[in-house]
Length: 455
Image (cartoon, rainbow, N blue to C red):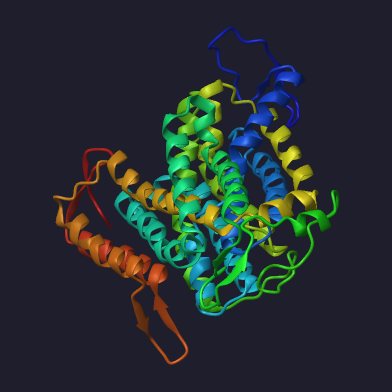
């Protein structure tokens, strides 16, 4: 088919719509709008917690989604939203005195590494990923990335307004699990609205709160909800302004080897994420998408590098949107083009970005305490789904040290000016120790049940 030509269908109830098909444009726009809502919450919450501009993130999520669809030749329907895989690395960079330019520079290099991995997988085959990064390793890395974020919640967001944080977290958990169908998929977005309303009500009932907006600052009295910046923002325009650390929202990246090493482990999480999502789409559509695995990984890497080049946030394929496809059985890539165009238009509304930036700290505390925990537990989910056997000492002992080093923030000082710590050190230890002990002999690959020799 032509790249931008879809077969128009009117499916019977329960009948699927393939990637190369579409409903009439009215219904396609409706499905596209659902995709926008599904990606919305996480796509702008994660830039906020990384200290980057949410408007720019939304804008590039649309641009990068179109890039992804073009690279995968419209065969892999997926939306590229803001990735959570680099949040912990970004927190580590800022803890060591790095600014937003250092953050985007480190992420840009990671994007290029992911792009290179995708090209390698395209020519060598998807099996290469499973040899170097088996489920036992990817699960451990994802787990230590998520749990490494616990101090960020405890030290920065939660103390800003503990009761709003607790109520927001409670609402998000209930919404994600107990609300029906599509509503549960947008639990982050609903929790954000709920937290905003609770903060506004608390301002009216209890007055100003005295708290600190971060670490190392003096607590001051302030309103929980302040929209002075929202009133001053333009309705239409390119993303602009200054981030909290004084760097322009749209900026050129800067590069430091120390900071790059802090975020490189996020690449492993993105490889696992992209691989899992492509397989999920393949299972839903009934198509063999393995030949497009490398393209998908490379496209995500290129998209992350492109966004970071202008100060934007890293990207990844979104499970939320795969969930929408599962619920609607509409896999049409046309709906994703609609969603991407809507995101671009939202990104060109500075007033929208100002509303996001005005999110009360307590609300972010409630949302992140759940999200960060979920990131960590995705690692356990990878283990369970692939039946990783912890009765096998290769898995139990080979992964243990790296997880504790990563979660606990252990530091290995190499020279006076260079050290490895936290996620970077933990990831290296997980990979090296696992393959070190696994080279002793045959090891059961729990994903297939076959005994393979690790070379």
